[in-house]
Image 1: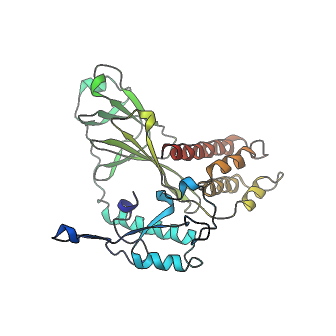
Image 2: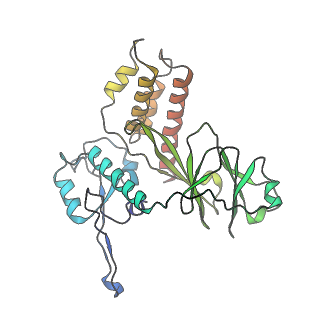
Image 3: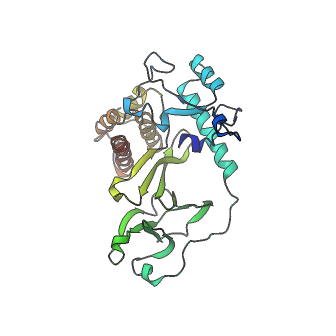
Length: 314
């Protein structure tokens, strides 16, 4: 994921040097890229004083792809190249890669060819069918039509994704995932090996929705054995001021400001999700914790639990 999202180029601002050099003589091929830790593996290493759970140190979220020169530079100057600076640098570079690979907007188009056999499995409009030897995957929409944003990548809400295995062609298909119209849109793609679905969440750092996790449903694995990759980078701000504000007695604080603080708490908790769950559990019963703010707190706890589940799978 790190190499792919970086386009196999250095993520340092303005560098973008290719990190794979191919030669006509295969033995002379060279891999120049280095998977640099944002928070060091050792406490005495660059930025190593920042708290992070040991299971997360070697994951995508704590790595940035650099050339040897810039790997040496960011580790030699950790006060200049802080955790936040490196995460922002990584995000900007990956956005640049995505922008330059993104196909121009095109008219909506679907994989679907009318097939009564599949329509009988759907309560809603059938929009995709992918037929592979390992599985047949199809998508039903009860919202707006999915939109193709890249070749083979689609975006939608209000969809159901289902699967039929070769051994189960004459039976009820398995439900893979349902995305309601009230949820943020997901991005999804399917190939001969797996279906991948990327969920989005609100990120107060950019005041917009950003990728949260990518779920990979491999065709030859049970659906509940999905692989989960965290996409949202952690926040290294201090948690104490946020908890202090959220634990105050009733004051003139807007619901929007409280919601922003809750999502900031979630971002800080990405690196320490078990500890973050303890923070959120103490917030239940707060004067502001009702209606949609209680729903936001519940959603944040589900996200933290999902991060913990992803660690256990890894």
